[in-house]
Length: 366
Image 1 (cartoon, rainbow, N blue to C red):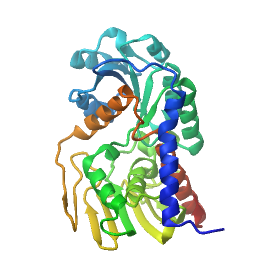
Image 2 (cartoon, helix red, strand yellow; image 1 turned 180 degrees about the vertical axis):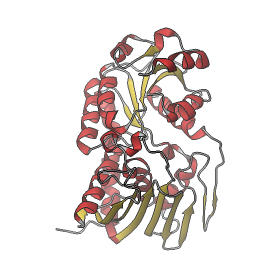
Image 3 (cartoon, rainbow, N blue to C red; image 1 turned 30 degrees about the vertical axis):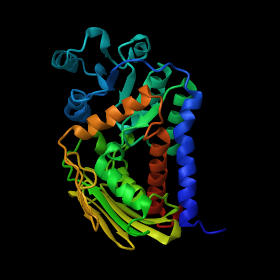
Image 4 (cartoon, one colour; image 1 turned 45 degrees about the vertical axis):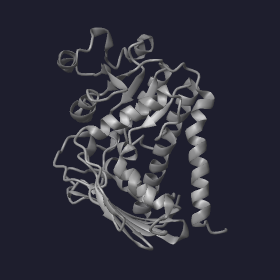
């Protein structure tokens, strides 16, 4: 087999990404609402919706909180009062399908445990509304593909909630890599994690998409991928373990390490953890190093390179507001989504390869 060169990989990635970004518009059958602000319905009112997305939607310029979907009746009154949500825009999981008849709601944002993403993205697509889905996209590549196909069949757009790809500091280091102003990337080192002391959250339940590789792991994978602009060709090695088997049971890991191999022999070492606080991305190039610390924090990513500081400042929840505004503008302007479903699928393909390598102890091609 002919080795894949760095140039071939970059060229291939550009072609694949362009095709995947443009393809939804060839099939888009639903009219795009002509509004100043798109109405967003949050599905699932856990921490991320409550503490980040809902407050962010009070800051957005191009979308607003229009509705909610919850299985907890006690939350309905709280949210209606706090955000002036009318009764007609409050749904549960039994009457979810009725959203299709609500002109106030233009986008359905799935903010549920990963094991529920496929089911509710498909249901959301069938309502004819545009669909946003939190990361990780799903549990398997097969589920991701089903979600992509469902949205295409319904003629709606699908975007995955990778806030960092919309974020200026992330885009700044990507620009350095793309322009090769520091020369070619030689190696990468990336880690994403925090100490999670909960014992009965979905993140500690395998059947709900728990374990660190799906949650914080996709950040480390994103760091490695965005940090050199290429797609990995193999997981050379991986290890998954827990020192707290009373919490992370039946083989579920709260620590994962892996070495990813990219075209041209570029290696990326990644680590993700629910046992320690860690968040950095180091990119070693021919003419110097880019150091991001943190590289995926809520309160502001920042870093430095031989070209100077990388530090566009902002406060929580600006990232989430910025992400939703950019996605809303793409919908209204009939432009490609920055982070389509295909992007989420790429990460889950790598997750599957990491888990296989950790289980078998062997190198796994991607």
